[in-house]
Length: 349
Ligand SMILES: NC(=O)c1ccc[n+]([C@@H]2O[C@H](COP(=O)([O-])OP(=O)(O)OC[C@H]3O[C@@H](n4cnc5c(N)ncnc54)[C@H](OP(=O)(O)O)[C@@H]3O)[C@@H](O)[C@H]2O)c1
Image 1 (cartoon, rainbow, N blue to C red):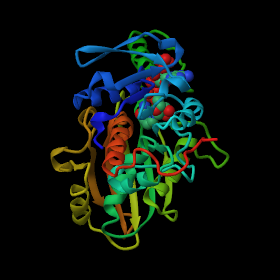
Image 2 (image 1 turned 180 degrees about the vertical axis):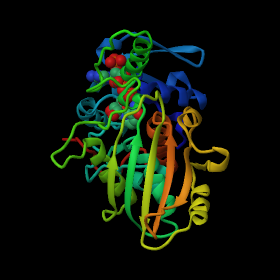
Image 3 (image 1 turned 120 degrees about the horizontal axis):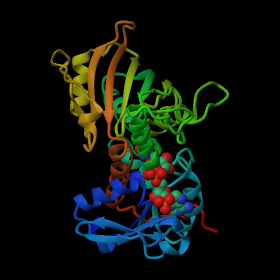
């Protein structure tokens, strides 16, 4: 089977991730006639420009999936919970962008470069990881070629598009208001985001970590098939439109030198090393935005730990962090001939 004979639904086509999914399909010259743009009832009839033509948005309802082969759902966890089982009942492979199913035992959580084979055991739904988890999992998967990873500490610098299109508009509006000396309106976050940094992404749990931080821990372990890695994240929202960055410290069960790490990272699919600190060359959101790769730089041996490495990651959260990973999962399922599950599907009666 090739992807050219699949009808693809984009649920959340009017949102930040949906817009990038359509851009990626256009880059592949995917025929407009094989794409169904879906969103909420608010957007019914809205026209989305696509390769010189227009897609008309329809409401995402169970019956709208009748003629669909693969559905990318990028809306909210509640929408995924309501619609994914309905789509699966109708024979659709759901590739879900939200957190609804990621940790369910019968749902693969996939970054194709790391655990592509996991698509084979899907029962109708495959989840894509949180946009901070994907680049971290790829980086750790590359470094595991040198030694066992025992512990990771990571601080994220997350772009506002990770919250959705409304947060990007809020950053723009607040920035203009601050520069003009006007009072700012705060809606998307607990505090102003323009000219500020928020050490909170998601709500806090009883242990003092946030939901986003727990996602990084649990999802990274699931993707790497390693429940023993100790991970301590601090997730931070920064006033950047697109691209999440991460400062990472990795501890191994033996010494790993920076050259060996650089060689492993450079040869890992989907990673580009950008590392010439003397020339001030390192990954930044202005490089990574609009690019497919995970960029890694500042690769150095940790002065505080004999078996430690420190490095810096930047990755477009809407591309590899979301829509691109979803398309690559579809490609992987097509390549492994498992778009349709061989077993009873999740949500069937
Ligand atoms: N942004 C990222 O970096 C990123 C990365 C990984 C995962 N994700 C996940 O992807 C999902 C979408 O994120 P986003 O950033 O694209 O959000 P967004 O910009 O706020 O877009 C939300 C989309 O969901 C649609 N929607 C809302 N209610 C719906 C309903 N009842 N039925 C069908 N569609 C509905 C909206 O349609 P209307 O326009 O009609 O309201 C809109 O198209 C979230 O689950 C998020 O956690 C995002």
